[in-house]
Image 1 (cartoon, rainbow, N blue to C red):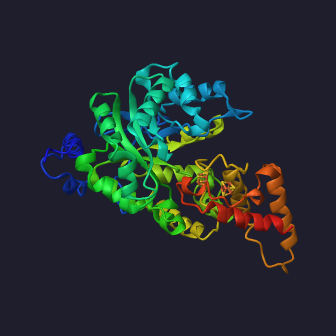
Image 2 (cartoon, rainbow, N blue to C red):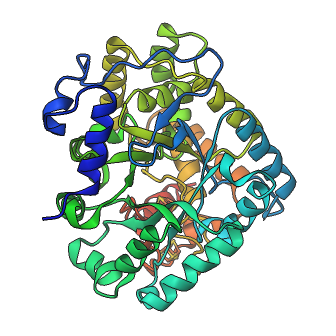
Image 3 (tube, helix red, strand yellow):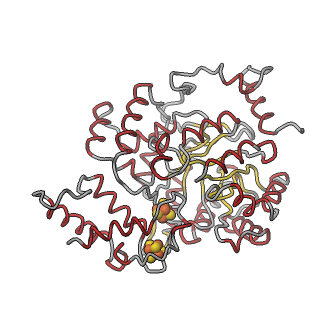
Length: 451
Ligand code: SF4
Ligand code: SF4
């Protein structure tokens, strides 16, 4: 069999470290690992963004990547002026990886990203976009080519640095074959990579272990350059228990062993880890009083060495500035901090929130519901300790019911409430977190109707 490109690049990488000659897997055991199996971080320049090297292309990628799915808006349209300012700030502070997709922001993200980035020299940034062929009618080569070429036009580029098959994994290996392999789509993108118009080819993953194993175990044929996975301190060991996704620990370790670098999405689990319950916040501030829960979550993810970049959907300049500061440079978690986060993950796993990451793939709802916002408000009530409701006889029962109602009235027009869900199930197959949306809407509606 022809030599695998990944193995070759891994060996080159090890050679650069002066470890050439033995097998890559064997050599991994010689890295200076700490008790958690992570090579210790190298000291970085104070105030400078931490950088990770793409072991195949040598790209020097910023540890913080900009996820362009939650851009600032004005009356629901993207605020281009603000996007430009944020992109300029990011670039001038060392952030050079920008991740978008044809479906983000109702199809307008790529255009906004192209407008913002094209004001800068092409060699100053890496742009990532995806084949978001979610509808069955798009599972053909012609549609894939159109989507890909349209991405290039909107992004104003003649090559794409990181191209991904979007949201792979849902219904198993058979679906992957039908969606990407049997119709020649994957082969086409592999040729585009050969031609240099795609510099790195990968996939973003949510879902069944069977598909993941198939894609990684057969990497001699696929030759993935990178894989994007959902990883944060809760999903490390609780993704499976919470919603039938594969635990990040499994995904990360398998990719590391296969010599494939990861791009990370959802480091804050859709914002949930920035807004942790009060008792968890106290556990964190006791150790580092000045650090926000979001900073803890970013430090935890960034402390894993097989990561190329950590994506964050940063809407406001304040959030961007905080995240830039967190990784300028990364201060890796100590072993005791890792142990603390593990304890917190176990504790938070028992909190009955809906594991929505606010990706909006389920939108629009044909009946006008704002699905992710219903979940966000419900989750806030849970993390604030208002929900679940106590027994009817509890002295604060009525007060808590009122608080939930007020939260919904403040956050959403009544036409968008869970109470309007018709149980049509159109949203069900679209959710990468496998949330039973109509069931959850039913639960929320039941609470709202109690008043
Ligand atoms: S099941 Fe409910 S939330 Fe989902 S699309 Fe239908 S009405 Fe909207
Ligand atoms: S319900 Fe699912 S698809 Fe909809 S925003 Fe939440 S995670 Fe995304």
